[in-house]
Image (cartoon, rainbow, N blue to C red; front, top):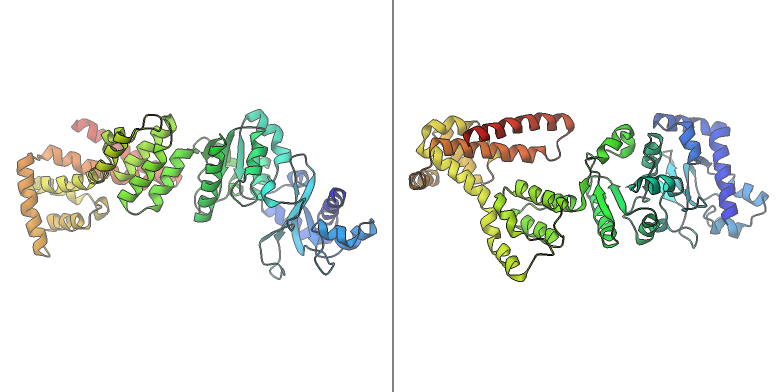
Length: 438
């Protein structure tokens, strides 16, 4: 069967490069930025939808053997219609199957990508696309970059990023990890930023962590693939997120309730020992939930965690999560006591406040128009609080700056490069102003 698949690969190559049928497909590869040299290196080919079965029979192969190789359908015709062909090889470079990409709207097969049918020889979960070419670079650089798509592998290799393989569009499997583990224990994962891609990343990384891999995640903007900007991908590897940081970030982004997010993130962090990566994840948790820095001391790492300390941490969870809302209320109280701070409050938008009541009260203080008795009562309550706690102008300015800082940190998450640069500059000014107040 291996001999048949090798001959089929050569046949598809000839159709792509030596026939008129291949002309528009070669143009398509050029439009995708894939040059002839790298296309030949990965042995790309073209199925015309007819001719392969007849050619195989001429070479002495029987129909049952052709079907077993995934090259003929039940009727004895070519299995693949008019499609771009990606030969799939094992770690030693032997062809075990194909992945075929749709090229025409009238294609009878529904999937954009269709693989050889599963068999004793071809199992999708056992294949890492491009591994036979990437093996030397993976071993030399002691790292493997895992992406989703075949074209991502080809485009990155053409751009000089060589230790790269594709997981065939699925989460990493135990077999794939064993293959990679023979070469390195350092993995960089780069899957789609959509929900399905995040799930694939999480499943793959959890399995990899159990097998002792050091995991980093390259988070690309939503809708962008490595093949879209292969020239800048090497630089993005330097800002890859650690396993813990990625897991905590995804939890915080998916969980609307702040207390639930805190509990879920705490469970993740409780399983890890202390490390720079853990400290980075802790800082993210504190920034996103606006927790005071001293609250992080209650989240002991796995090696130091004990029953009593864990219970204490759980008991303080509601108090910690209220810290951000308390800061909002203290600012409003300071403005009630110090009307000169109204301009500071007006510079804040409703989005600077998490509590809907605080947003309404801000509007009331800025415009002077109360729309119900609840705000009038709140004014009296906060006024008394401000007097009791002696909330002066300086304290009010600091609280306003803290809310500015919090929103800028939140806006930075997911911002593109241009926007992030602008936000970082504004954040630096806020921090400078806080330093002067201190």
